[in-house]
Image (cartoon, rainbow, N blue to C red; front, side):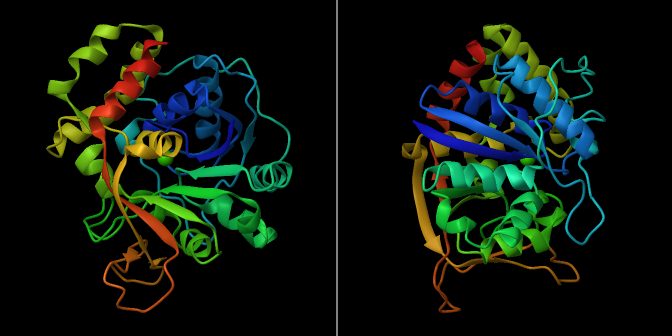
Length: 309
Ligand SMILES: [Ca+2]
């Protein structure tokens, strides 16, 4: 049995990612830790709680984490995911409540409890994880793997030309995490752009499902789809969900490389830029496996299975 901890700025695509993880018979989600990012922290927490209820797993612990980045004002993506981060669906309040204990302590506690077994998926700004490894620098040696959705591999960003959203929101945290000694698998934004968008002409089997979960999924993603359409992408992008999927089933990774990766914090125009040294120019020890190609067709089958309910 795989043991996962998911750190999430729950809105939009994070919801899909949680549904995929919570559906898996081979893995247990030991904890969900929430960080501010896509929307403000309290809304991210509500969305995470509501999603566990929709997935039929209201017993999964949800811990509240950092309300803002380490050193910066919070930048959100309300303009993508709607005011509630859920496509302006305005779902009712979740019935369940949060789990006692700060997210940072939950991360450290899970790593201790499942020494060597815990796989952490970071699918928001890396604030909670940076705080955790700062509090306990031995964390990387206790964690089996850290799988991160973030950054770009020598490709264009999605919030600035240079940077992907998660790393842009908290570059200092991302830099701390990449320098901490984790065994990292990085699923960058460009992988999603090439393999993680479900386009309108692929939507028919999803619409045909017409289950409670599939209707929930369309509702959560409706605002983001409209936003993407306005910038010329007619579909739903799922960077976090493909990251969870390739964690659960590594055979989805069709190509990857192991490189030195670091994150820019001081650039005037490039804060949050992820430097991926594919040429080994810097001569530094590689610290991350970077996903380069991904099996989209198989991913669509997995997602259909999840949304079938
Ligand atoms: Ca996210």
